[in-house]
Length: 153
Image (cartoon, rainbow, N blue to C red):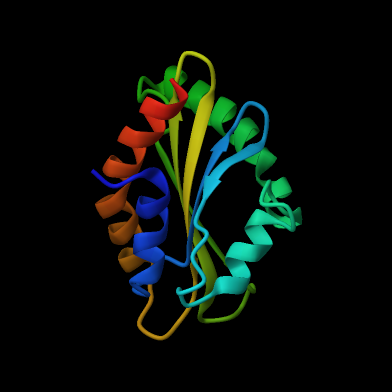
């Protein structure tokens, strides 16, 4: 069975819609794991997310907002009977433009000790779209979650 690092790097190395993957502790805002490969389409994105010491850069520091999103969407789910937040898809770009610049597919999981976010980041390239990014994330999430759950439970 591959290790976590291999599972975080392999989809990025494939250069087909996923440009970085990260795992974070939502409760503390810590970067736990991330892609490290330099063989993907956007190695600078990985460096930006990881930061100079590998513990999370300025861009990653902004992901702390997902803890609030999780709490509020879980409350919405309880009130509507839909359950907890499982998945968010965020598309980035400029208002009024016909194309996007990036996508983040974010899965949220709960362990007894913490909430975990697993994010799949896309920086738009020719042929990319929301469906491809979401499909590639879905294709990889189960294996990644299985190893993350085992390591951090």
